[in-house]
Image 1 (cartoon, rainbow, N blue to C red):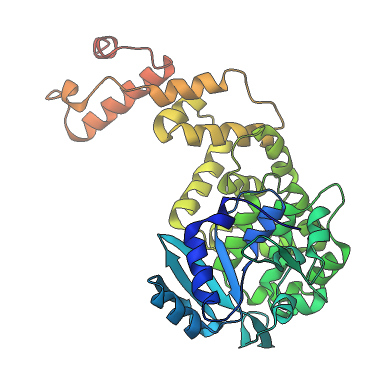
Image 2 (cartoon, helix red, strand yellow):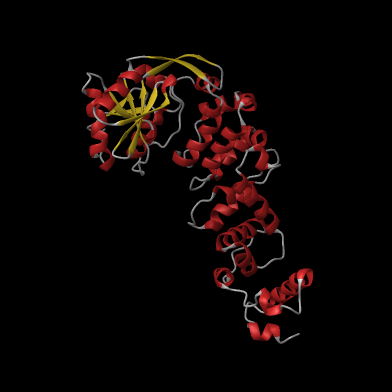
Length: 382
């Protein structure tokens, strides 16, 4: 198979290849860039693999006038920046020792050994600078079938890094074919290794879960997680019922991981998944708003159109009802509304707490009127 695309002919990337190959070494595109190109999906990060050791890559790049950042030099990775474009360049590696969280690696000059230590076959594809794919693990066939399959022995791959349990479901959500079902051998391996999840930091678990939830339709992957008991282990009390309905309610809207996490439910996802303060606050606000009587227009006025849209979709999914026809109008109405009364309009007759109470009273009247009452009408009521 031969790939093509602007990423392949970018002159900045050619500079990196020239620098490494100019020292007599080999370099290949690897991982996501090859996988996505083979799937005709957008390519973002540019990762390269090489038989050159990190110091050789660094010296060659600097000699070519490129900037080098030692992002993970102990593990064989340096970032080479050419014309503002970052290239993560990693030396071929083989695992010497693993403990389920970290690996001790040794450098090798064998592409086959490097491929054998990767997680999934679709991530173990390489391409030379002309776009010719090198496949030593059957990854092209798996990509054609949209099958997420571990490289080699699934149990061994899981035992090397327990985060691969969650990556298995995440990659199935993004790249798998729900019609063909999830890979049975892989599913058995992640179920058998589930105890290893307890050794992982919450931040890493949260990162994988949010990436999974951002897939176009994460419901089949989440259903498989629930089937194996892994979902309950990661997020006790979570249920896939609402999120399955939510995906249909969204109807082509941009996937939003936090909205979907709210639908997934569970006990204290904010702490278990170590969410950022902003994301944790958003989950709490969405949870509170689902069952509240506050109208969409008022939510949009107080918290913005995005919040109101999220609440509308979540309510439809939770209460198993269609979105109301006037929901977009109500949200737009609230988002554009501007309360016409200012504190100065009520002073000096009202001060301090009395001023705040009076403003709140007038706000309630204004909202109840559908944002129609004018400043004059509100102030004239006494």
